[in-house]
Length: 440
Image 1: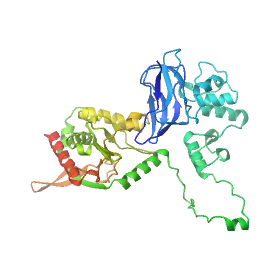
Image 2: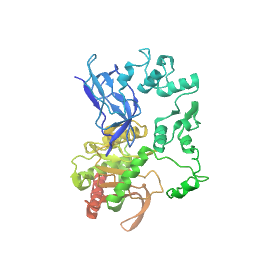
Image 3: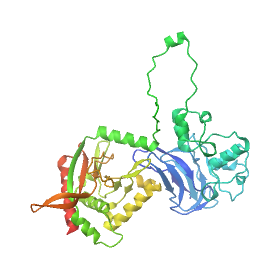
Image 4: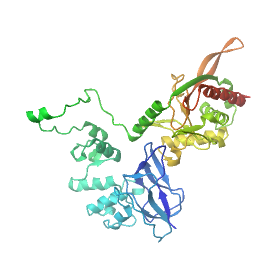
């Protein structure tokens, strides 16, 4: 029986996602866990893995198509098996139907669905086009480049994110002058585009027209930077968090000199102070479950397992991938899992499951030595977040004498609707106890 491949929820409050690229085609044999597509959510591009092994029976949505969460996007089953009937939304056309009417192709040629459609529209054989995708796969850009070289009048060349910005701004890409390689339209081209001025209205029309509200326009030395979908989502969620959740902050300074000595005595690969803070945070949350919680639609939920969200900075914005079941690991295990998660985030190789389900977040700016301490905005629907400042040598008093020890400032932010200041202070007190236990 065929298995439905469902578009998963790629993060809190995500309603839809865009299919960026299919890595398989109907007839391909795949194993369970194989990456079959790249999807773009409000947070990031993520790899979609197959939940079943078998043969790809059909693909129901084309590349560059917005798909609602929960929709069936493909079927996987046995060779020769018929997929169950599924009807995609009106905005899309099944790629399998598209393939049946495509121009003649060589069976060994790998062609993306959009490239297939474009080649069919122009009566082209994709096997005659050089592919630039993985394993020589022919992409839409390859077909467009071929058309341009053939007759100089192809569909405007632009990446999906450029098309999206133009679409949202109401700009016809056919009217934009390209400056990119091979005649490709870039984001800068869209930003620089100015439509032709409308005809001057008559005096009578001017008198009857509604008053015009002046709009700030870029001046010399200014360039407007379009906000990416991810950045818009970050702005919306953090604004909502700051407006709806009254934040309360508690800060403490922790002497980690003894902890550094303990870490230095451990075998390689040796955990660093960041790994230790994550581990001690997890241990603390098990003892202060009031902060390992979410507040959703007026209901407060405490979670038995600690699903630790870790803030990771990238050029296109801040992501908080989730290390699920962080309480299952010892220090070395948590170090390995955390570092692997951070590496996948920076390499843009996240899976949908990496972006949802967090119960507590750590935001660490300790890599910037000038940041002694800071406050962080809560990541909804969580009720608290821990902000970690830089570790440096500072003067401490021990038995009446001054000493230079490495210390770090931790600031915990709490949602004052469901958490009070004593709970936050108790979190820091328990963290100190866990730190003392580690160094004994």
